[in-house]
Length: 320
Image (cartoon, rainbow, N blue to C red; front, top):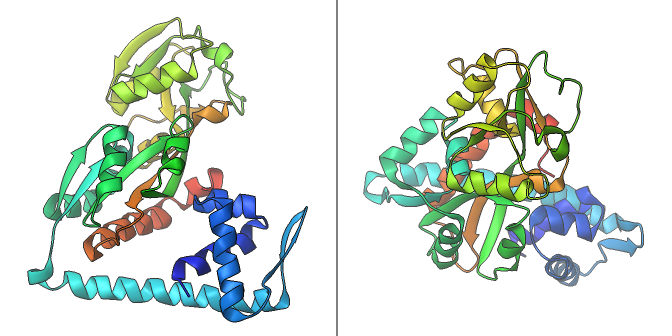
């Protein structure tokens, strides 16, 4: 019995459908069905009832679910204890390489202690998307790729037989505006609404390319400023007239609001309405190699930080 099969089963029970569970765990429906069938074969009981409305756990499935949650929780605690014990031994303190995208680097930088840990025990390298995927596919488990995956790139990741993607944050591309703007009260922004507004854009190459993709049918006609500094983008809106806006994303704006030194007073964020504005940020693992304890610890530290410090964000933008 594999621990991942139990994780898949728990998610299937939560999602209520093979489609939803497969989507949330980033495996194919065929792979999920194979994992559940393997559990049924090993235990000798039918665990789920399938219908056109989804799946329902059998009585035996409900029993497995209760124990599966305990087993997975105990496994995770055991792993963390082993990692802690391992990391306390200086002679076994192997470094790792952490390859990151530009945007994912901003999320990691939200936790100064995390960045300090990386600086002390890791090589921290910003690279483009294709290189990050290649690093993950060829990894022996001693390094990590941490990146943002957008609508235009998710199929490439899911179709790659050599990698597995674990998202830990969902963010939405949109715009920051200040009180008094005509955008006040809008729940979502339509691209044609803001195409002619004075706007500041993130000048980093991949973020600029994303903006061009999102606005290919409604080009922004009044770009006033381009900068790679989030502070400069926010300051542009804060000090300009009420029509000025800046391209941002939901999680990036949340992190800025947590920083006392960032100019966010009186500023608000609204996402774009198009599904193409959604991005998932997470770790890309080698499918055929087991992560080293150091790599697993690096993932665990960031996930715990986000869970402890960003709970309000996940209420507004749940991962699933």
